[in-house]
Image 1 (cartoon, helix red, strand yellow):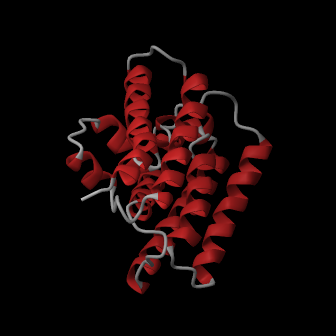
Image 2 (tube, one colour):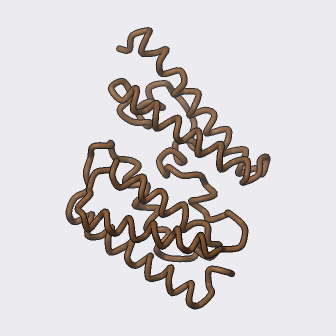
Image 3 (cartoon, helix red, strand yellow):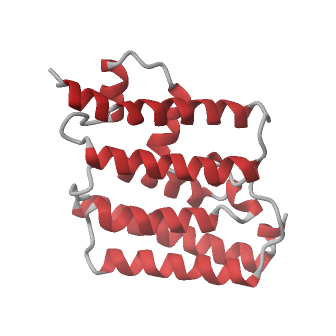
Length: 198
């Protein structure tokens, strides 16, 4: 049973989930723009992750927390599982691709592949790098149609569901490496053919 002090410390956790749910619903209904949604969603996800670290003994997972407190926030639950705003998940950021984006995305691919080659396996080692990679990759309008994008988002969801100290297996690492290398090759093919500008 939670003490009164523990319950009080969970109030912001409840608020973040509710706020995130309202934000998701507002974005889906076009009540807010992508420019308003993205930074707000990123901020709420960061707050959630920080709070989760603080209350991890009382709240082992968001699913258990929502069940325990009878919360019905399916949009928030999905966003927390994915770990990035919908604008990143669905590549809705508009604007022309630039050389800077290409350079940053290439750098992110290389950094992540190097991390795997250096045998980094823990969530807290891989998740931030993969999140940065997926965010950069999603800037390209054509990326929503690329096979590699969905695989990287799936890996991001997998890592996001793990505890910070948990590690992926050697088999998972090999598959992740294969998927990221495939996405990297697909990214470069799209640059050569101009598909990312569609």
